[in-house]
Image 1 (cartoon, rainbow, N blue to C red):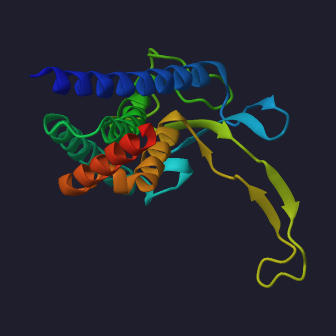
Image 2: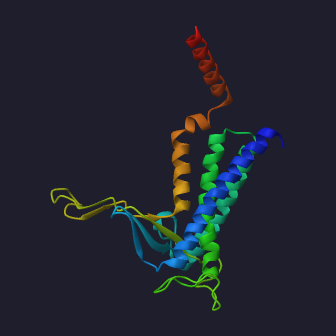
Image 3: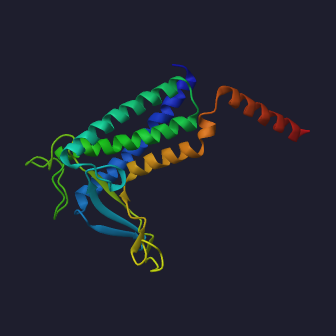
Length: 225
């Protein structure tokens, strides 16, 4: 492994480790100190720590009961395996640092939620009416791959009633931002958004990168004249 590949691998591993550490430490703290549904205002009424759990996808979306939960967990594992392979390929090809960090963010976020889904049901008691206990003697609240994902970030920034003259939605309550999410969800979202914003730079062909580099060198030379 040459120096460039080693450097890219180190950046990727650091990104993944930091996301997973913050994500899991926060989830562990929330589960062992708060009751399901409990809220702690952080900044007034627009940023609240709201402890909730979901059996489905990111931002609390659900997917088809017990069988759907198992299918989703297995799909997550396959998806994370594919992302890991893709990330490894990018590192071997010495892709740009920005692209590798973005894919690392997506990988870390997906892995963080898989840990909840796969193991939390076995490691924690339920959180109804009391904070969860870690490694309870009576066993956890569910089996392998049937755990619930812990969410806690709630941003009800705008709470209002829509004007009655609006078609279809007039007079209804409007809340933004409704979903409750976690660090892992945020990591996936940030990684995907950055990929979309910088896709031309990240996925430019070698000829395009060479042309851009030559143009930058030409502009730099002209500025010195």
